[in-house]
Length: 237
Image 1 (cartoon, rainbow, N blue to C red):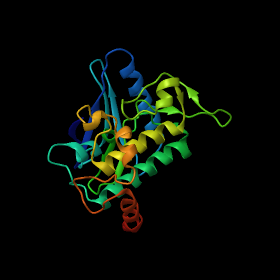
Image 2 (image 1 turned 180 degrees about the horizontal axis):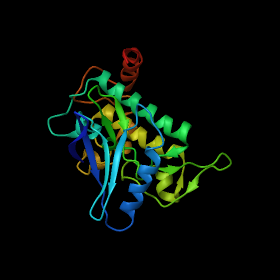
Image 3 (image 1 turned 90 degrees about the horizontal axis):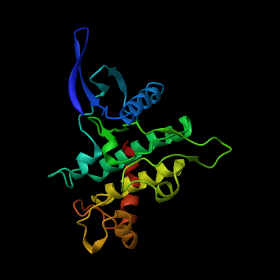
Image 4 (image 1 turned 90 degrees about the vertical axis):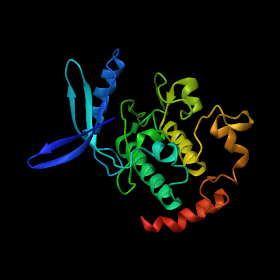
């Protein structure tokens, strides 16, 4: 993602420019899909598309600039461990959930790539879903799923979707659940160096269901306390 400035009259606005890979047809299809989808809708928890460019050399999308970067950077960049207090983490979770619920209930769209890198944060830590290149229409009311080629990110994709290609809204919900685990624990969805030979976060967390809490932030000692804290904090935003 590149940063730049866009002029409107005498005003300059900081923008984010996403350059897509033109290799093969996938980059162009994702560019088209992202434009067709995001320019039709608007929601406070979806990244706002400001413009796009297509010439012989470039496929580009211009988005509003998110000063706090991605949730991935906030959680996992060096020196950032424990930097997000619980009330901010909860705010991010609620915002991302609202954006995802809007995609599902109001648009019948499935994102297919929910992960911290695709959750951007503005100056107030309002979460905004981004990267809609893999978005797909959900099943019609008389169908349980749509069948499609598997696409997504290892560690976040729902097992049944990977195994069968059957895509539903629940596929996104599973991915969002992995993101919640990462927010609560401060651990990555997949880490080959994780102890106990459990690189997958779900497998690591399963026997610890009542002790999941970030080791780097210590306001709570187990998941029940985190959820209790969340209920009391919700009124602040």
